[in-house]
Image (tube, rainbow, N blue to C red; front, side, top):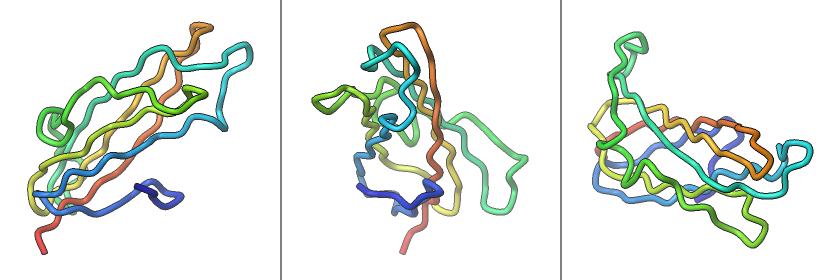
Length: 113
């Protein structure tokens, strides 16, 4: 799925959506591929961003993203479930073959339509 430049999208609770996080533009000097990755999530009710709680098992199929692509510079997460009228921040950390670590976030709004 392609997401906009601010990395936000809306989904329904029943949808299952694969998302590729592309680190190809941010490859650290001396690295050429991702060797492992982790993902975690927090959630909060709409308009209450200070009321965050853990949500990894609620919104992600797995906390271990799949490394994809021939060049191995993308991490794929599977976004599932979620609670109606909640916002989610999913953080993906990738570890490179030179020891560097990078992270990126994706924001998801869950709305029943």
